[in-house]
Image (cartoon, rainbow, N blue to C red; front, top):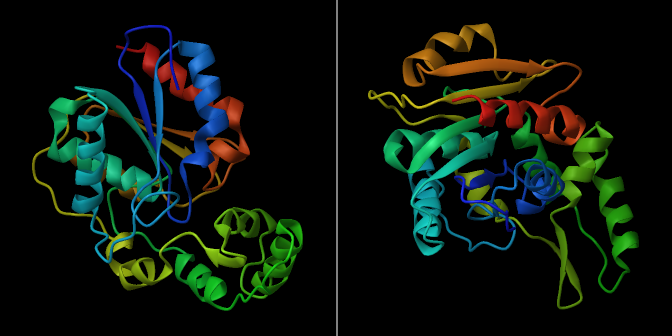
Length: 256
């Protein structure tokens, strides 16, 4: 997505079970506000990206570094949500010279406990009839997700992964690889050298993923960081309060 100026471009990384489309409307809003170039990325085993049994944060970080190289971006501002936030932190800690600033959305550099394993169980339980219209297929899948996932918004998010291939409905994400790597995805690699450039941790006020008990580890690895929470939001901060999200990001970009 093209901007009008030569300022450092922004790169958005989605979370587990997400895709680059999660950030399309946010990206448009940020381009309008800042004129910067914005790139939205599908992480491996998600969206249109390739599938691999390997899902370490280092491997996903190298995917990103290869993409930056291909796009001839010598520097970027990295914005990552959830798993994407962990990829972003890993990349900044491994290759700090490439990352001018870092934004981490609703996740900390620690072991995380989530209900994501339940989502895998739910998705595996879904069987959709062949040759249905897209809306009928989605409704059929949604009914089957309901016993496992109470929250309507979460079900809708999971359903963004339902795609039609050769007349059959299937999940676009590599469910096997995600299931096999779940313990790893919930953890975070060990680092001793901090990332000292400006970093912004933006959490949902109703979400547990950036809490005061995580602050010491955040400050150890990201000493030049500020932490904020968006009132009235859970884990999907950018989806729940997009205007507040864009305002917070733009305010951070404007600080030196």
